[in-house]
Amino acid sequence: MSRSDWDQFFSREFSEERIKKYFYKFKYGTAPIYAAEEFLPPTGVIYDLGCGEGVFCKFLRWKSPSRQVVGIDLSENRIEKARRRSEGGGIKYAVSDIAELNEENIADAVSIVHVLYLLPVEKQKRLFIACNKALKMNGRLVILSLDAGEAGTKSILEAFFFALRVGGGLFRSAAKLLSLFHIGKPIAEETDVIFGHRENKPYYQRERAYIDYLSAIGFRLEKRELLRGTPFTYFVHQYVKEGNGR
Image (tube, rainbow, N blue to C red):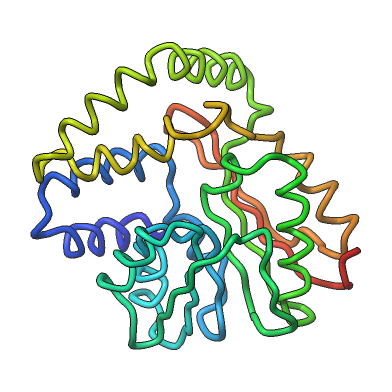
């Protein structure tokens, strides 16, 4: 696992952004995105879908400078920040709807890290078909997501997002007020992603659902790992493209 490397990278990356450092340390502490890095090849073209501000893209290059990383996100604001953080030197970014990715046989690997819960199930399926199309034959698809099938997880998530629906308006207002000050900007930006969600509803699925669907569209599960020790259990899957999706 890349945790010690991630801690070293993270401390250096946010050395001059103290407030943001603590905020993201909490965020990535509960969703261990660093674990997906070891499932990706050390060389080749890697597309990171839903890349946000490009922190994971930069980590991929930091771990292996032989990687050519392409980060894609729907948010122009986040892509602008990603470009300021790390564009150039083997990393580039684009603004696009990841489910509408229109590339063919170009990527050696695709990563989707802690993003799927934002997409309705049908859109997730379109995304996976687009990934199959973009990957070269025998290319790798790596996903990290929370396992909604774990005991108690569904109830906890339902309670959490019910609280969002009830208190979301007040919390967003407070976050917007904080955003007037430098200290509150990262908090405001992140809460806008969560509380700005139309339904305040996560689209987590059971781990088995991903395995079944991806195997039906030309992927073979090659490697998996469960990550416990945070409030929830996450899984990392590595799939190999063996056929064309439909």
